[in-house]
Length: 155
Image (cartoon, rainbow, N blue to C red; front, side, top):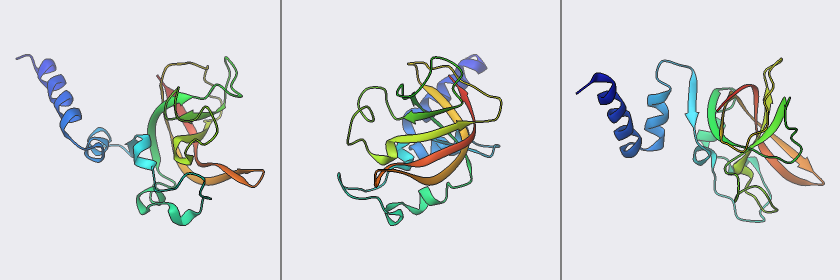
């Protein structure tokens, strides 16, 4: 069998068989970037419950200051067609974050590296940047808790 086909089949098998944590480590082998999904930053929180830092898992707290890569969608609210240096990355484009009651762990406030911009797209994007925890509180209500800084975006 051709080596490229064999390696492609091996990667496909890994994606199907390995838990997400193992795959994240495999993809990130040899780099300082942790490859995550929104599932990796979930935590237990009842609907309507007020956010407290004590709800966060140690795994999430350990991500602070580390370079991560996560895939999601650019939230169209407040986003221009082109030239965006900041945007909100959400888990999916239809169900999680487009109305009231979205989970706090389903969005990330993103700020790109200086001099970088991104155009709005309805397609998923991958964001790589430094993970931070910092609550965004509006009207006494916590609206977001995750941020990424010094980011690069790819499709």
